[in-house]
Length: 185
Image (cartoon, rainbow, N blue to C red; front, side):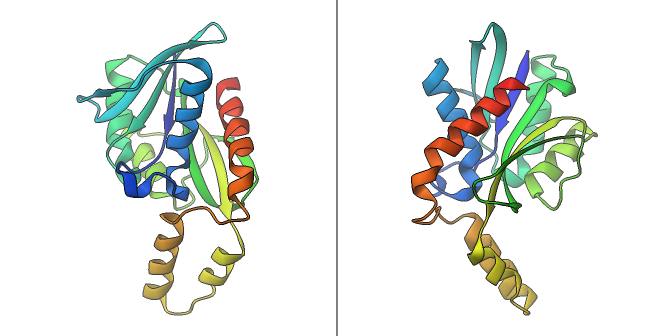
């Protein structure tokens, strides 16, 4: 069985943010292929078991906030007796331009706190990641801010901010592409 984790923060205020793109991709997979999310209190995650293209897949949305997703992932792997090479994590990526989706395996976190949390919890980076690009010109300007505290504050606002008006029309197609890539792994 594969475990596909979508990163996001719980709560209405985060629903349409860049950081919640993993949740949106999990929701898309469930809408397309069927399934129902139920709260698994042991793993602090919403989960859905599905059979897609003849393969059993566990879809999950940790309810622990992105930066603490590792513990939920560890509990899901243990409770379902899954192999780490069958773990696929979907998340936003500030280093990839918006409109691009990159798949990687056994790569470092590159500063993504959610990915760091997973690597620390499962004690390896040997899992797949579907990285949804969110970099844009606004972020390029933020990165040039000299005052570190102000720069970090603006980056946090960007990450938990909504996609821009030029990005929104392209989102549905990109979400579909990211979902297909995750399901092909």
